[in-house]
Structures are given as C-alpha cells and as structure tokens.
Length: 209
Image (tube, rainbow, N blue to C red; front, side):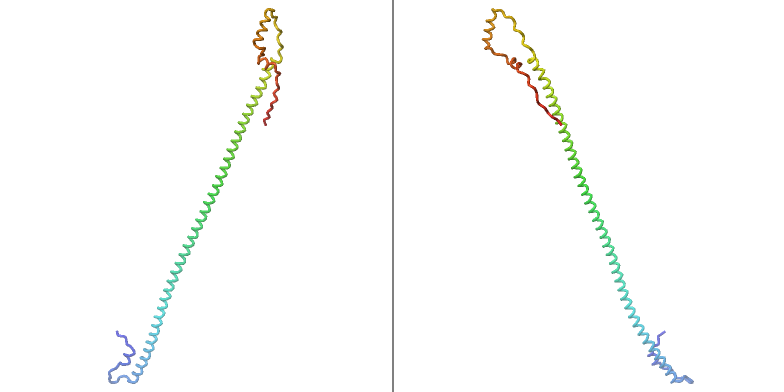
C-alpha cells in the first residue's frame, strides 16, 4: 500500500455524485488533515535528525569509551609490567647482595682459617724448636757431666801415688846408667810431666730454664 502524503491529499479530486458530501466541508477537513500530516512530518523529520545526531553522539561516545578502555587496559598492562620489573629487579638486587655477602663471609672465613693455620704452624715450629733445643741442651749437659766425672778418675793416680824406692844398683852398673842418661840427654817423659801437674777444677756451669 502506497503511503499517502500531504501533497497527495491536497491534489486529491473526488467524483461528483447525487446526494454527495458538502464540498466545502470536505475541503476544510482535507486542509486540517494536510496541516496535521505536515506537522507530523516536520516533527518526524526533527525526530529523525535528533535520532541521527544522538546516534552520532553515541557512536562518538562508544569510540571514546573504547579508546578509554584500551587506554585503561594499556595502563594496567604497563603498571603490571612495571610492577613485575620492579619485583624482578628487587629480587636481583637481593640475590646480588646475598651472593656478595656470602663471598665476603667466605673470604673472611678463609682469612681466619689461614691465620689459624699459620698460628698452628708457628706454634708447632716453636714446639719443635723448643724440643730440639731441650734435647741439645740435655745432650750437652750429659756430655759435660760425663767429662767432669771422667777427668778426676784419670788424674787421681798421678797425684796420689807415692814414688817407688830406688832399687839397689850394683856399683858396676852405675857407670852404665850414667852413660844411658847421658845418651838420652837426661830427657824426662812427657807422660811423667803431665802426671806431675796437679788436677784442675772444672768450673763450667750451664743453666737451663
């Protein structure tokens, strides 16, 4: 069915017939219908324009909303990435600090162990030196004691023993003994001179602490 417009009503012509409607009333009514339809058409056009404008605004707002939503998503993603990066960097800093502290403590422990080893080595060397010195002094003291005990034993017979009485020599043998002495030049035995010397006292003292 074709839609009737105000122009169609305005140019509409009716056939005349007997006992028909009053032409003036019909024309007046048609004018009122045309006016009403024209008002409705204007209002409809205004509403259509408003609807179009609202649609455009809605579309614009939707675009803005989408842009804002994307911006918020991007901002949230960026914040999450920054947060994760900060946590990761903090973890790395803590790990580096822990490793540095462990290396420092290990270095100190190694230095302490080295000092302890050096101290133990020096202590053992000192103990060995003390033992060797003690053994050396003990040996020297033993040798000195042995020498001091053996020396009076060797010199005692020469200093205590009395000379034996001369034996009776026949008169005939006297010249021979004189000749023997003259031959030997009246030289005395070194052993006899050594035995005639008095014994000397050993005054050597060694103090060992």
